[in-house]
Image (cartoon, rainbow, N blue to C red; front, side):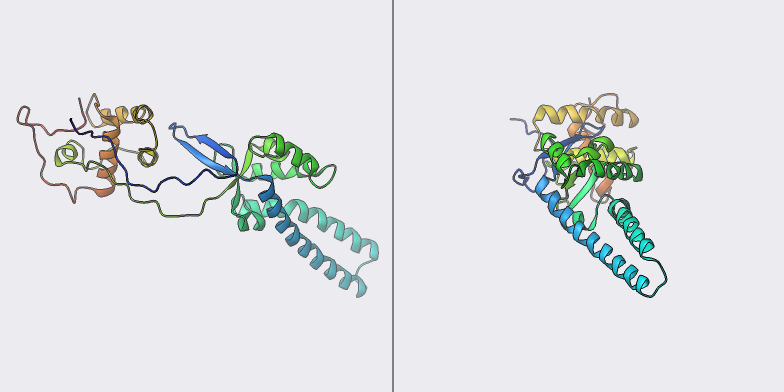
Length: 283
């Protein structure tokens, strides 16, 4: 039996499926990612933490205004008017400020490892944050987030009205860990590496797509791996002067190896007796 040259990678096995709903997002390179959607219970706990923090801020402002009123600097009406304004600003501005500065997180979300992102998995911008929080008043009606809880229970991604309008969702951030080094199996041969230029013409976006593809190898079917590899490999091969590719997955692995390891570990090239040209994943 002829040994296969398919890419083999040593990686950590995927963890068990989380209890929260999972959202699948597909990138323009047709590579899919899964996000854990934050359920109502987890979001309610984060909201409670933020509510306590907002309450402490309001209490501090109230004490400050009372002390100012006692000193005779302002009238009673002005004092309570200032408290009402402070309540409005804190209720709405608290989320806008923190989610803008902390990239979609408030103190409560940060403690519960939650983050607001776009439905496509991208980071939210200021307009998204303002829009989703403007509709917070509608979500609260008629009280205790009744409408928001109802809408979240009916939506597959647990989005409230503000999320639906702004095109956002709240996800659970997995604990950060260093990605394990990719191990290409079988290892690149000198003959294969000799067919590649010392610096393959690959853009940063294409390099990222190659790495994402290689990290998913072994968890996809053979047909799906071939389908994804064929979307990128032929164009890269043409740039390097090769009109045809016989093993797209292998070519992407060799390009990744060349760009990350370089030529330091590459021995002298080996040529075929028939053509005198180096062998590689080409037709």
